[in-house]
Image (cartoon, rainbow, N blue to C red; front, side, top):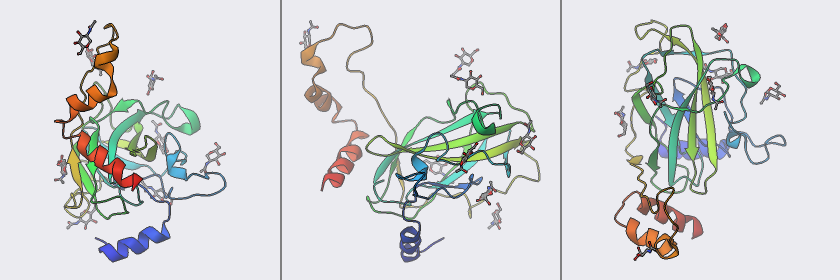
Length: 233
Ligand SMILES: *[C@@H]1O[C@H](CO)[C@@H](O)[C@H](O)[C@H]1NC(C)=O
Ligand SMILES: *[C@@H]1O[C@H](CO)[C@@H](O)[C@H](O)[C@H]1NC(C)=O
Ligand SMILES: *[C@@H]1O[C@H](CO)[C@@H](O)[C@H](O)[C@H]1NC(C)=O
Ligand SMILES: *[C@@H]1O[C@H](CO)[C@@H](O)[C@H](O)[C@H]1NC(C)=O
Ligand SMILES: *[C@@H]1O[C@H](CO)[C@@H](O)[C@H](O)[C@H]1NC(C)=O
Ligand SMILES: *[C@@H]1O[C@H](CO)[C@@H](O)[C@H](O)[C@H]1NC(C)=O
Ligand SMILES: *[C@@H]1O[C@H](CO)[C@@H](O)[C@H](O)[C@H]1NC(C)=O
Ligand SMILES: *[C@@H]1O[C@H](CO)[C@@H](O)[C@H](O)[C@H]1NC(C)=O
């Protein structure tokens, strides 16, 4: 593990870095800002500007571990995280047709502050998307999305080949590559219906002030609001 000061140096070197998938790997380093990607490569849908790779890594047909480091750049005191799967290789650039198959419900990341921070988060048993059926030898792509507080998203992917869960080619998952740093908190995301679809509009009850008043007890909002203030300050 990097010490904090080493991490800051690493961050300064990787000036526009954001999310790195540490297990089972990633397509490659997309921590770049250049003429082709003037806002930074990692903002490009669907895989942060990286094309499909052929050095695929192995991942179990029964689902498995995904570990990542979300805090490689400032501005992520909070973020929403999504993990999706794209099937096959018959889409653009030899990748999947789409990445529209969620593997988990999104959750909120609570970082220590809005500056770059060290820390790894690991979900040891991410399932396949609902109703997915895969067999050993199938190719797919795992997409990690980090939704920043302003609504723009950072993308990282890893191309995988499914193998049986006891396959010796699977990289071992252990406390070295799959752990949660104490720096990183997690919050559940709630929604509250203000007006159901198909219901008559009501200017009084739809007012934003009403949404705020009704939502205050929902803790999930608090970090968002605080995070928003920190950006303004
Ligand atoms: C694939 O190769 C790229 C370029 O060498 C490397 O950055 C990346 O980590 C590799 N991915 C895997 C899953 O091994
Ligand atoms: C991805 O592939 C396309 C051609 O299919 C190429 O024009 C583009 O430069 C490649 N992107 C990167 C980042 O290598
Ligand atoms: C899966 O990907 C590997 C590496 O790109 C390729 O050699 C193999 O033919 C692919 N398999 C299928 C079923 O598409
Ligand atoms: C997404 O890709 C899958 C194949 O992986 C395909 O069956 C499905 O129709 C696609 N969905 C959309 C909305 O394109
Ligand atoms: C999964 O399959 C069941 C049974 O076919 C279906 O009712 C359900 O809508 C499917 N769920 C999704 C997310 O596709
Ligand atoms: C954990 O597994 C990795 C391979 O994924 C291996 O390199 C490392 O030595 C293992 N660590 C421990 C403590 O067993
Ligand atoms: C990390 O935290 C998440 C969320 O609480 C939890 O689901 C996961 O099991 C934890 N990972 C490890 C390796 O304990
Ligand atoms: C509109 O909302 C207010 C506040 O919830 C409620 O008192 C009023 O009865 C509603 N009016 C209609 C027409 O539904």
